[in-house]
Amino acid sequence: MSDYLGFIFDLDGVICSTDEYHYRAWKQLADRLGIPFDRERNNLLRGVSRMESLRIILEKADRFFSEEEQKTLAEEKNDCYRVLLGEMSPADLEGDVRAALDELRARGKKLAIGSSSKNTPYILERIGLKGYFDAVADGNDITHSKPHPEVFLKAAERLGLPPEACLVVEDAHAGVEAAVAGGFDCAAMGDARDDARACWHLGRFAEITEVHRA
Image (cartoon, rainbow, N blue to C red; front, top):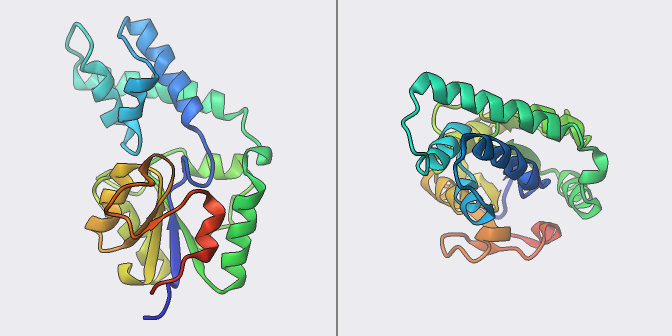
């Protein structure tokens, strides 16, 4: 196989940045519960599901929370997060990201989103990319979040391509691990840029147009 036929992108931190909105929502919840939480601890939540993120935060709590209480807390956080996401607009999609996506599409590449976020449809709508991708697999479709490869395997299936024909683009170590576990090549950027498991290491998103299988 001479080149990648499909590109599967994580959403948060790759296509757009919602990290600050996540942090503000988790911080508000943690402060209300009297649980210490700062930006350093927030880094532990990158690439993992909402419930797993909550459990990491609750490790610092001084009491036990039942499964039902945890579900309620997760919903509280997500309600706050969605309100904050209302601040997003197409202006949050950087021009070089859209240009790179358009160039890949012009070359006949299939494009997909593979994100653990259940808010993926809303975020894509807010930034003006609703209906843009050939396939979307997100937290609403999966039972296992990253580093399990389920979301990427589902995205590839919806593209009609095998994992070896696709390149996953990720910014979290958990996402790189998920890609490798699913049999995908991976291009890493952002916090995961130096992850040795990735085949490609991107300094900025636009460099994805320069990636070609050797």
